[in-house]
Amino acid sequence: YAAKADGGRHRRYTADLDTSTDEEARLGAELRTALDRGEFHLVYQPIVELPTGAVLAVESLVRWWHPDRGYVRPDVFIPVAERTGLIVELGEWILRTACLQFADWWRHGVAPYRFGVNVSARQLAEPGFVSLVAAVLAETGVHPARLIVEVTETAVFGGGAAVRAVHELTELGVEIALDDFGTGHSSLGLLQTLPVRILKVDKSFVENVTMAGRHAVIATSLIQVANGLGLVAVAEGVETAEQAAELYRLGYRRAQGYHFGRPEMAKPLSGAAALPGLPAGGPG
Ligand code: C2E
Ligand code: MG
Ligand code: MG
Ligand code: MG
Image 1 (tube, protein in one colour):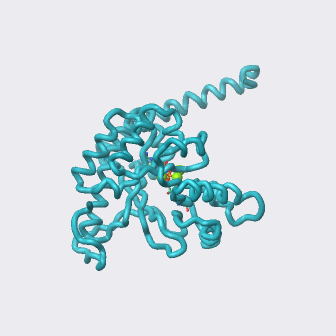
Image 2 (cartoon, rainbow, N blue to C red):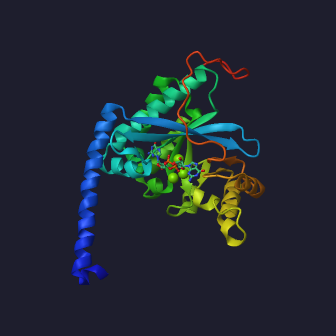
Image 3 (spheres, protein in one colour):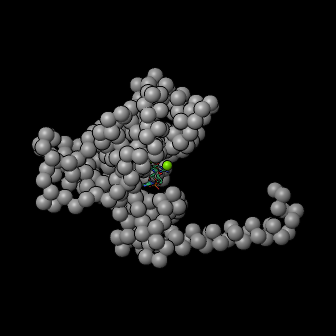
């Protein structure tokens, strides 16, 4: 490592490291407080059918407004919550909150067909995670087939408990989506052994889809892989009508992104009129 030969740079490097460790410890402690104070909430983003734009599902995404820091991005605090272990408790809150919201939408006749919840590696590998999912579904009256658990390739890469959990969730009737597909380890190999039905093609492959030449090659290949294996591909991060049109031309039939709808808080439904034409009965 070059900086070892250079005292100044080495010291600076070390100082940065210390600062970030302090910062991480502070953030970790604040996350604990935030959960106790109820500073988290969920937003929901539509997943639509191409080309109609009909909403088929929503993905729940956690949000944190810190009293002093303001908005903290989940890709900043989720990794910290993973390292401190708070993700187990925070993840349970997220799962229950999303299920309660879905049950509420259902009661009001405005539920989408399915809803997705992101689950991190640590949660998935936690003993009792599948039992927790079963218990929360039972408690909220949501049918397992309504729930999509979104996991990243990295979370299941190591095999072991996480992979067992994926199999058990499938047996429960829950659907599994591989999130950020194509950015992790050994993406294609995983598809041979994991009972995954949905591939969420990462936005990095979607953003260049309208550019000429080699840029669209991966998005093109991944829809062929998905179709060949009988899986559903969802294009993530679709921001323009041009991207949506090109994705449709390539064979994509599911998309998510700012072009179709931003993640938003659920509107209060008490007193709202139910939509006509939706099946009556419980969330099952
Ligand atoms: P993800 O699961 O891949 O979520 C998609 C991310 O893309 C979200 O970022 C969403 O707001 C963003 N996005 C959606 N459409 C567009 C678009 O058209 N353009 C662009 N540039 N971005 C778009 P967000 O909410 O900041 O979340 C980032 C990541 O943090 C998520 O990636 C997920 O890995 C993690 N995360 C978010 N919520 C949760 C949660 O409840 N639990 C866990 N374990 N992780 C979560
Ligand atoms: Mg996701
Ligand atoms: Mg994703
Ligand atoms: Mg992501």
